[in-house]
Amino acid sequence: MDLNRGPDSRPGINYGPTIYVQSEASQLGCQQVLWLYGDNHEVTEAGTMNFFMFWTNEQGEKELITPPLSGLILPGITRQSLLDLARQWGEFKVSESTVTMNDLIKGLRENRVYEVFGAGTACVVCPVSRILYNDKSYHIPTMENGPEIAKRFLKELTDIQPKKSQQQSMAELPVNGHSWYECKVTRVRISIPKYHNQQSLGFY
Image (cartoon, rainbow, N blue to C red; front, side, top):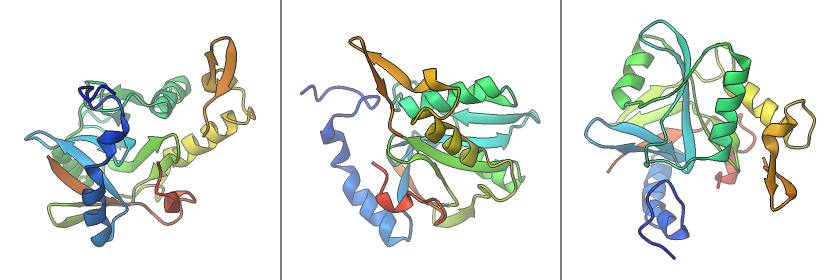
């Protein structure tokens, strides 16, 4: 096993050090850990999920934003599927750009953040309702005031998996001539709303 691989790959040993931090989050009533990087508290991943935010940016544009593939995060298949879907919709700006906690908190204070959610193979899409950061709780209005982007993504992807939708090519992955289908430091704790029917699985 190559133990020198970076954080954009996932040997099993990478998960060991996260168990204690996850237990801390559980004691604080949260279900996952939002991983931050650097002095500016750059958002990287939510647990083992890729992080997404739907908001109005400071230029007044509706935008779906996720951290870029800079070597800090896993290049998830579900992440790429969401980006592809959003770009096909063509309804809002889609960006792979750095997000800091200052960006997120400022957006929340100015009522510009509509949804925050994680994306990954096991949960597909998992909405976030609360972030606990520096001992302060921030409410996230995910799926409270429309347009329910997280819910729409979840439906689109789960329709693709059993080939219900017209977007079949997005789920089909040719491997050796066969077709396979996709199934389904500083830290901050996040809380997952109870209405997400997969939240009790612990995701990965």
